[in-house]
Length: 301
Image (tube, rainbow, N blue to C red):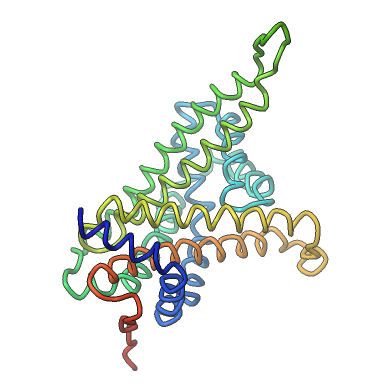
């Protein structure tokens, strides 16, 4: 506990130096390149992953309700493009009876790709952990599918809670003789639910992905940091797409794919920056902030 307090004091006393250390090490680890790889495989994985979850959950919750909830909360992932993405998923689900076993296995494979690439990216950022202890390959193989199960359960919980909050939004209360609608409170609570789910998901990723046992406190530091950064970037992206962007004139029918890729690329950057914050926080518990850790050296072929 004393060590944790001393590390936190270092950050609070030198926030600028800590931020610069995070940026320097992120560049040394080729974080932008890693984010590009994560974004590319996430783009391949996101639609198959969502289709698999919806196909499974549609046996429990009506499909239209699932798609409505998904549309609302995809705004937290791909701002401004959730409607187009959900429409593509809706079109596929309309033909889901033709999905054969081969296509199902293919979707399962692609839906796990992003998690595998993310694990490799995390191993670069947390290289000091990989040098000490390596993860068994069976754990790495099973982990993506456990995350898919985790996401499916999360989507089910969010769908139920969203339904409750939307119902609350249709009600009203009387305060000092005046009728007050609960609509705005419902909207606010739905936003809080989305941000909280986002933070818990990021914290879970940071808690599980790095090799070795990462403390929940450190995972939450990364989760809160990444959530705040992404909320800032998400609102900037949404504003850009609605006011200034000429992306549709440039890319035409590819607009949705390009916009989703841009959003996922920035999201991957934020995710890996959050991981780098945790790695640097661990480092400064053992040495001064100014001491730069060694970047990962790639072997030449």
